[in-house]
Image (cartoon, rainbow, N blue to C red; front, side, top):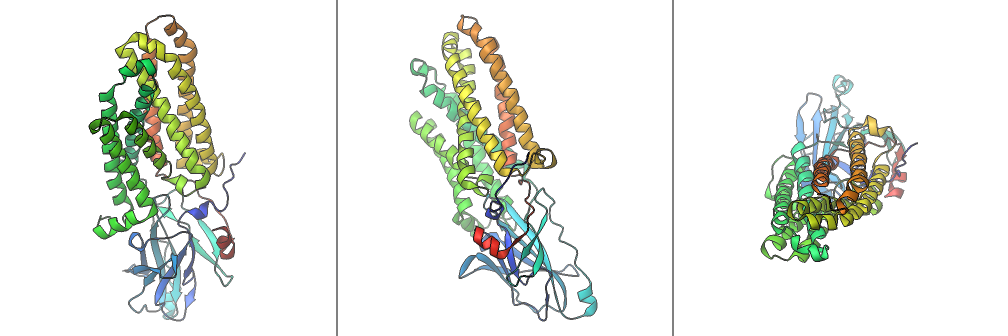
Length: 439
């Protein structure tokens, strides 16, 4: 069995389609500029182009967009390049918010010894996306170029993203269950909701700063870079998510408007569905699937915390709400499983990717975790719930639910890493004409 990712899906990443000079070409004279044509719009302030000679000397080029094509990045070569072998190293920000880069070689006629001395490939970080593909230039000759390669996975950003979203989901889910509890809505733990949403908002603010540092081509957050980043689509979406998280905190903690906080919190989760791999791979299908995944997990997690809270506050209320929470959990787990499966089909190329790629191994860990949660749910629903409705103490059920919550938070953190780990690459051969027809 094999998953099939559409051939055009990979082109939604910032993929280098062609270059001037072409990869592995030999020129009679030094080029006045390096021109790189990508599959999507690139922002010069978020990009880098360097030329490295055979001695390892690096010339950083001043880059700008072609005034007639925002997909083209132009690096001006402001000095004469002598005969010899060179490599072009480039780096841009992909549509999924990940910095990607690659390199290719060319030579200039001149000293025979210099031209005959090949340049070793650039030592870029090795990730699951490290592969190569042949792409044809407009003249019909083929050139070998590196597919985009990502920076190492940022552990701090991944943890912050996972924990930040997890805390926000807990607060919003708990608020949802409390507001829909009817006669038991008075048990809504406003202070707990405020604290969890506050933790989520703070962590997402810190995540935004760490993410900006991660994608910065220089490793510094200059005013020009921050302005350019927030002028890009991915930058605006990341900023919007963070602002919505802060507004959710304002609505619940300062304005004390629970319904408003719920609406803004849900909006924050919806925006989160448009960040990461879904923004770059089959977005028309992947983004709705990710949104459903997040919202269902929010209701599931919120229901579990609500039940534990009631068990500590009022056993009669816990017994009355146990059935409703169990039904919500059942629907949620179905939606989580189906939406997660849909994303796996879109982001993985074959079943083997679950074992042979880092991204696939994380997906497999989530699958195992969800299966364990399903087992917990079945035990709670058919083993413990009947005794609860028969006026037994909900303490045993509360202990089981706490274990569920702990496992769910682990899965949420794994989700934070999935947002940064590159999906398995698609090795393919295509011509520029074919690429243009798929854009």
